[in-house]
Length: 377
Image (cartoon, rainbow, N blue to C red; front, side, top):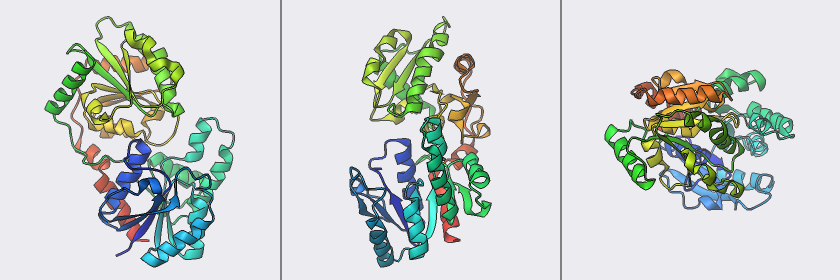
């Protein structure tokens, strides 16, 4: 049986953000097929996943040279030789230099697990240095023996722009652990809890947005909600709704969105049990237009039985055909159309999600396909 190493350069225990969950549950699922040594930071020492051995070779996250420390090559080569490892997975392209060195100087097979096209993400954030990252990212992917992309669009981008051969690429989408349909009774109980917590009328429709608000694309989405979309909803006299905005990192200058409280907007801050909010939501709103990759919160909301309205860029990686009509996609920036879709969803009952949705986003099936590809290298 083969054994692999995974290079994880940031804290993923406990998994909170979409990126942290993507790495944690990827390792958890893949380890059921292939034993893994996780070379990571000291903050992950407490990770307890069967068949994953945690080795904090990267030091602490506060280290300023964590991503450029040349001594890592010798540490990791020594650990791979001692533990019989011939395959290395790197998360994102940032340790590309290290993966390339280990491939050509230690004989390892290199696998790049991409969460999005990083250079394009930083271009959307208007970072002047994105072309430098693009060149580095391209070199990293071209050196890999297997490239795992989170969406079909990213995979095609890699083939067309990075010059990758299709045989060295595959889609490894974001999954949800324990994915299953949420029963109607569970949704009712969840909604009752939030109705009591926020003193809502039982007939109130719950519209949910969730995200880390220190991340500019999510913060911009909140601005879009309160400045453009919600004023249009306010004009609907017979629309009884509340918008719950969850997530940490809202700038202090926004004063917890208190100015919008009388306009049917509640900022909850970070919530411990976001699953409760997904379960309770009638409609998940996702007016995100930047950032790249698949928006994990959209997948989680749909899986929890919420209908969803999203700008097109925010729905990349989620095929409408898999959602049974529960996902409405709107052209980026078209707030009137976005508000109209929300109103339409209020007056239409949700459909049952097809089995294909759960098959596509199930971590066991996703990592099973990846394990098959690794074993063929």
